[in-house]
Length: 95
Length: 272
Image (cartoon, rainbow over the protein chains, first blue to last red):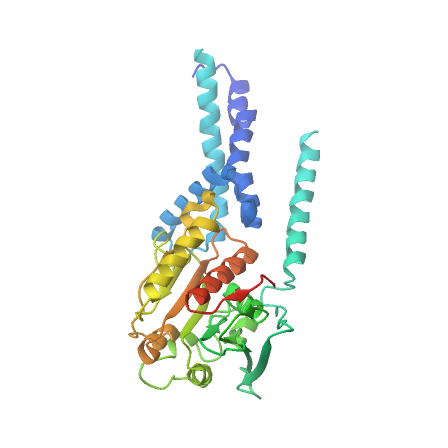
């Protein structure tokens, strides 16, 4: 990536791509968890991420209640969103 | 719409959803007593076991004109598994074409009132040794109801933190049959039907399956059913993972209805 300053970093970390990806991962799953009939296909990416976290976590910390996984899930979703945003900006700068 | 307005609107929408769903369920508190409304046109009798003790609990019997076959349905053996006792209470209101349902909705009242897995005498589901008398007063009273009913099928309603064969140690989204004739086939068929018609495709890791066959080798209630009665018995396990309580109850009811139907008891209508 061709970094030109703090403005680029800010757009990667807080730009619309971050919020779009973060929202797609978290919001549909959150709504589907509160009310299962609303677990629509849009929730699938977040659903898979949450299941993967709990499966791995079950081996590492067996007694960790699953609702506590919302903390690493939200943080992980933000990390994925930042990576997606950085990829978007890198591709944009290339073409 | 600026960010602050968006967040405020989102919060209001989510808040109203939660409040609306709580009102829809009619559950004032997690371990609150649900409504027990027997159907007007069914013969329903109510007995109480362990009267005069803190463990007293109701036993409901629904009888159609033709009283056989008989099913025993037990909820609330573990007090922190709300789907079981809430579903069992709703079954009290079912109408059936033939046969009898003997329902103990809240087997372990003390555990339910404390919203804990165990009650005054520990884990109730470890007090049913096959081939001999249950080891606690409550377990003996429950088994007395089962023995008197002489059931053709027994269904034990539970929930689990995780998903069977996905999360290690947990048993949710599974139907565990006894080794009686036809029980495995029933469990497999009901699991397949739930996956085809009830579980959303998005939640493909929440698909049901039939689990380990119980053969009367442990101290659990369903093992005593397998060992002493040698009749079809099923543990129905829902998961609490990513499922709201109302869905847990609805899916518990759907599984129970299909198991009953496959064992000769057809539910009439769809209320409540």
